[in-house]
Length: 350
Image (cartoon, rainbow, N blue to C red; front, side, top):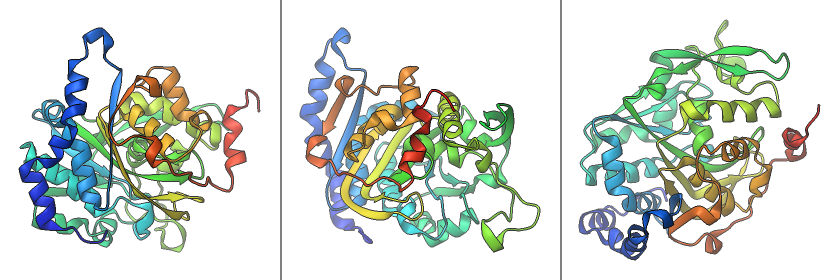
């Protein structure tokens, strides 16, 4: 959807009709005895309005999110792997749905939209995708993470088995930041899927001003994002797992209104899916998104590593689904053409 039905959208926000649609689920969930509670919950919405999907999916967590934010700055982290390929990037309407939700819970006074675009100027991406117009309606600020501070963390490289230093955004790492991963359902050429965790971990490494792929690259500039790939399919899966404790989002919002299948994250094709997934347990959100994409969870290395080390909830039997059922909204996304090569992570020897 390129436009939002403002009257309908605001009416939904103000009257709380959406919250009512979840009342039965929430009452049931809150009535469980402590020992009977499930490990996590994930909200799934479907429909024809992207902003409304995000708003409705966030509603069941209003109290929890408000308390979790407290006095912290809210960082909305979109996925702009490219600054000029709309299908691969977070849609402005999803951001607007989140901002409208934050307004409804009184947490709109300290919000930024922050990114380090993988290729090219971050603000070019903000402009190309219509993000800047959000400032006309909301008191939101825009931040190019490449121009902010950083901390050095170390990652693994499968070629030399040595630690390599990487500049990671201090905005993302700060304990004063409440990180919201505003991701898009996509297949990937290195890690099979890009969802909420990967959006944060690959947005956090910084690049030099003037860096771009190809002829537009300024001489002498580099991007630390390449280092995090670990020189191979084993390396990237291990690094995503290893960085998760420091760089996971506090809230996952995964837009599946129009996903990407095939040769993602840049050259895939659209999937008309019309769903949105939200959870304060990022692994549960990614797990449910994988299921909705019709992908076998066991083939995704970094998410399996995180599941094995209790980084969140990945067991579907322990995830409370709020709203729409998974089974009614499964689409079978075509994987990248190089999928067999990606699966090398599952082999025990080189």
